[in-house]
Length: 213
Picture 1 (cartoon, helix red, strand yellow):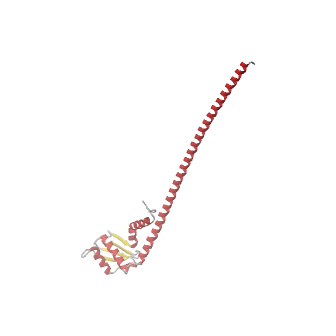
Picture 2: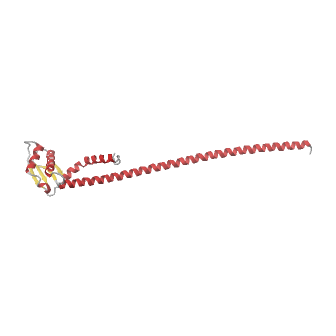
Picture 3: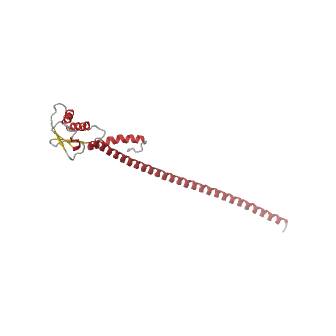
């Protein structure tokens, strides 16, 4: 092999080496780009999955918190109603037993309200055994005068009703009108406004926890 052939061979090998290096360099760059793109894709996927998991956790937390809030409010309202029922029962018991009040004055107020409700006419005034001794002729006359005024028509007939609870019930003689003003019925009529006032005070004290709205 002469010098020219040797030189040519070396040039060919050198050119092949340079081409090989460029190919390796290009392949390495392509791999690096592919790896970078893959890492970016993996990071984006991981970020999205984490965000989705966070959203799901937050949604479950909100749902659980809302459920707990509703359950707390439900139990509060239930307990509030139990306390109010006990309060009204205690009030009724005290009133019917005449504790802490003037029986004569209380019965007169109930009678005046009932007589005013049915208006001047012949009327039967019914009371139970516990109030029979309180309903005197004097009380009947004073209540009639206050409810109907001087000279109003209509006579009052007193009757003891063994089954009637404390308080008074008046009925027109012809049976056309009836006004039940026993303490039990009167308290039942007042229950809604009294309950509203009590609940308003309770809800203000508790920061509106038991609001029905």
